[in-house]
Length: 435
Ligand SMILES: NC(=O)c1ccc[n+]([C@@H]2O[C@H](COP(=O)([O-])OP(=O)(O)OC[C@H]3O[C@@H](n4cnc5c(N)ncnc54)[C@H](OP(=O)(O)O)[C@@H]3O)[C@@H](O)[C@H]2O)c1
Image (cartoon, rainbow, N blue to C red; front, side, top):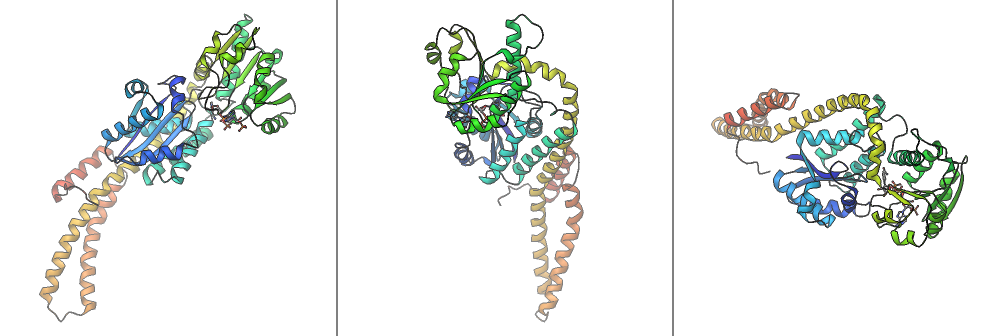
């Protein structure tokens, strides 16, 4: 058995590749079914967020299993395997475990320490269970990741302060306005005419951060207007207009700054739409949707500046530097958790060998028992036969108890593997496990 992760993230792939591999709640059950149909796959789970698509898997055979996963990703993205390969990463065993714990802790996030990822890992653990694609090993690993993520947040300052993709988008907006005005320090957004398209989790955070950066009035544009109105009610300090998506063009025409964060699968804001509105005096677009809500070519329209989630790198680098010391403390915490999981996992590696040893000893016991019973003759009562049989079983159990406890207990990995090897050689246990 072999734990591995294969996937891509903002470290390895640009948004135009990542968006081809976003797996939605609706398509996830089918994707899990496809993965579980692969012969080499014993357990599988999928982490799909705006910045990553990762498949965690327990494989019967690593090379063939990873090749099958890469084919799945290529089919899913519509990209030929050769085009996708440079963007994929594969990690095995301890590195895969370490990676998952870092991801859950927010240490691998674009915005270091952001909290949304922990909810997404929790969801991955829940969906794996619901769809029965995870079992005792991956299930335990995912639960470990969730508790490590919580531990890092409660025992360090990594998650403190308002850090998210939304806060980074608002910070980028401030930076771009400051650059425009030739200022060195972040500017107040109170002078901007702002619209937020999308009123889900990210939309809510955008409003919250815009309010914190001096915005006092804005327009919410959402497919479902009642949801926009419900969101507006939670911000009584702001003057908020709520409109439906059909009024998007009008809002674009009157705004100087538009943030988009919808879960639409295809872009709603295109060059063609913007060209109908020209002349545009000055419009900044900040799109945090993945798949993107805004087509890349809008930047060609006069007066328009457009930024997507990859452009946030400009502001998140500073956040990363400021949090480096805290990140180190978090790394140390999760290393301990990763080692504990590995120790448990290594203990499991002993199980097949110990099962073979027990079967071998049991066969000897049964043969010797039959011989002894036949020598004792036919006068032996059923009770006496039971006592002799129990005696034989008791001896085998007592003999096995010590080695089993030691080999499944905490031990340095290499030492455990050596001892298992010696056991296999001494008792000739190297035949292939069939059960
Ligand atoms: N969650 C994160 O941590 C995170 C981080 C960075 C980026 N993102 C990206 O941000 C976007 C929104 O994420 P979220 O977590 O805020 O999602 P969410 O809470 O599920 O909200 C989804 C929003 O998208 C709208 N929407 C869904 N399908 C639509 C369609 N076909 N046409 C128009 N509007 C549609 C919804 O409108 P209704 O109210 O009408 O349903 C709602 O406003 C996604 O692209 C996601 O990848 C998310």
